[in-house]
Image (tube, rainbow, N blue to C red; front, top):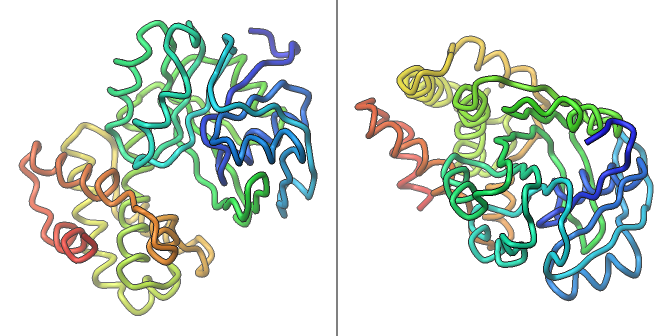
Length: 291
């Protein structure tokens, strides 16, 4: 893989995250194949991907779309929701995928083992993304956060440089566990509390601050127990810096009546806490109330 040769990249699930990444890659000259249902694939083939972003501008770019992968690619971004992952993987037959880089940008932890078992020849690379992006209609992506930050836990320097050239902020990490828990330790409190209180993080950190502090103490205790670095004050500072209007995707799913990632996020935290013998009464209560 060269930093100057255009890539062929598949995007499994061209929603908010996948559509943004796919649009940026296609605009930068790469071949992008979006894997989706028949209706979405038809719209993408006809109209392309339209991205509206304060950070990257407003643009429309051509992509290819299909319901199943029919040829090898250089890389695949897996950007479906955790609730749809098992069914969505039928769109990528293992014998077709070959040895591609596979980057799942899913919430939680359990997807890594599933992907490595299903695609033993591929280079499944743990990834995380921090972004607020939404699919407003098939092929139409609204990117509302002032950032789009990807972390990859592998030595994929040339691939990372290709992604940086699109404008994405990409960092390579050596420790997969530390990287995944760095994301989950922020995401779980953010998702659980904004969804439970049906409001932006600004209301949570002002009107429910004691509960926020309790959750941060519990999540950092679990993070330390699994062997990843964690500090509740640093985590709190992150919550105090982000725009108060930010809402979680779990919260939007509840409002829209869609299945939520409660098990992939809250469930993953509670399973890790039980395995490590860490008491998490506040997180457990929030998960129960949201179930």
